[in-house]
Amino acid sequence: MRRFLSLLAAMLTLSVTPVQAAPELPPKLLVVFFDAEWCPNCPSVRAALKQVRADGGFDASKVLFVTLDMSNGDTTTEAKRRAKELGIYDYFEKRRFSVGYLTIFDAATKTDLKRFYRTASSEDMRRALQDFLAE
Image (cartoon, rainbow, N blue to C red; front, side, top):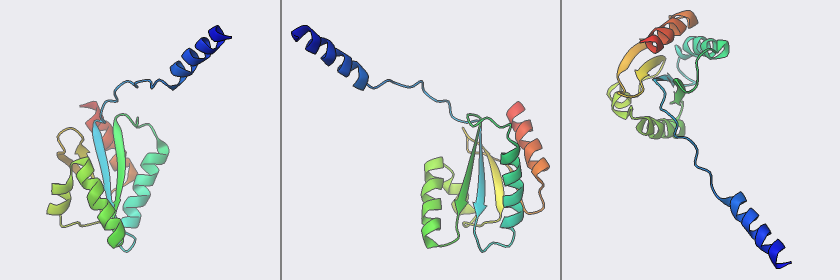
């Protein structure tokens, strides 16, 4: 019985020992949509972005898609917090928290690589992402 209890204790210890996951590499590109419900330009950008994401083909380990919603005070507060977390708050603040566009950033340097406004198509966005990933 004592041997059984020792074996059981060892098994339980093994089952609760945390396993360290392999470190994840940061994505190459950060795609940020600056959105708001009241924005007249946002629906066309939103639709193009939705199409790009629906078509797939962009590995989540290489491209991180984020929407920062500034529809009201609460969502703007959360968007500011998220922008700080992503390291793009200065960009966000410099543009005076404007909405209605999408920006592709180099995820490592936070460099603004390209912006898309309401006239951009999903194909334009897809091509730009493919080009930046190929570099």
